Image 1 (cartoon, helix red, strand yellow):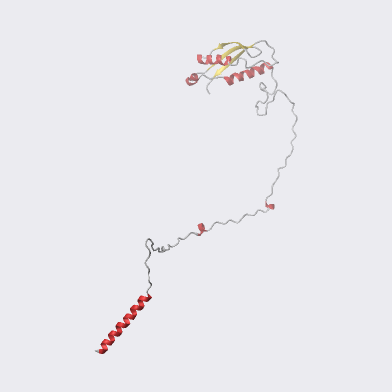
Image 2: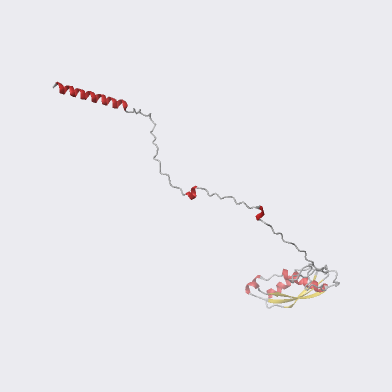
Length: 207
């Protein structure tokens, strides 16, 4: 009976020592102040694999060009003898047929002052010709022949229609056209006339 009591007491004593040792060895966690939270490290994510082609910058080695590798060939300029041409103050015609110089030189040779004046006068009328809008919409065409008299200073002394078109709008447009060049085309010094009666056909065609 005494042995059992001694064994129980010894067991309890050892158990007490063991419990005390555990308590002292345990980590004491102090309470946190108000407003402070524990921060835990996030679980590190597994890094994604990056292709080597995109991770590494493409390095291009510089291309070295030797000076001797590049050769520049200079074109040799050979002077070409050009036959002298007779100079003309009137103007000439290029090989392609384009007119260069003063108007009225149509074939490369000088024409008479009267022919040159008529040539330039017809070009002036053609540039200033106005096609009536309604006649254009209706498809009206025709030729109006005008006769008018000019003075040396280009003043219009009179005009008349000697050949009518089928449509009155075209006839009236031709009369207005001739009246519009009053004083715009004086005679050159080579034309010695007190007045000059000129007949010109004025065409109205749709292109």
